[in-house]
Amino acid sequence: MKEDRRTLYLSDSFSMGRGSGALECTCQVINVRRGHNRELMDKCHRLWEYSEFVSEIELNIRKGLGRDEAIQSAIDCCIERGILTDILRTEKSEVLHMIFLTEYDEKKHLRHTFEEGREEGLAEGMEKGRNEKLLEQIRKKLSRGKSPEEIAQELEEDIDTIRSLLERAEK
Image (cartoon, rainbow, N blue to C red):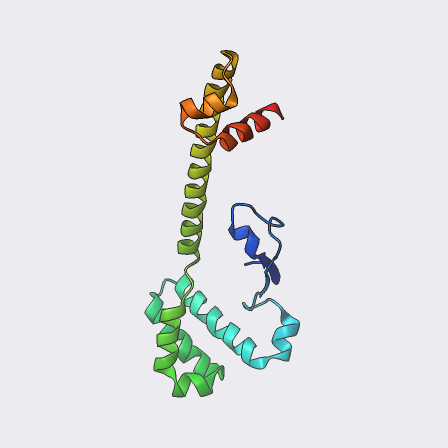
């Protein structure tokens, strides 16, 4: 996240999209990475320390260190700089365990989101194609003088589905 703050909307996670439901749930995401939200970091020293610790890990990874080594090195560096020393000295193994369990994998998340979107798109496309084919059959049968009820029976479809497709086609 490059911006300092971002609002996330729960409805964006669903195919109908924002504004489609009766209730909207929002979440304010605050970027606590180094260089962001300076005013907040000035007010909360512990949060600033955490930001420095995470930035140190990221820097080590960019330098080419493996994840485990990058975390170990960041712990040592932060202790030397007086950052989170009380926690990092006494709870070092707990910190390591927590970071390994909770590490957010943005690429994995984006792949998963892409796959979900692809599956939704395929399902929507198949439904649209099915409805277009059904509408084509309905039109042919109407041109032959068949009633919507007869068409529904012949196509083994619900009469409401037939009427709904006819209404949408007229619009």
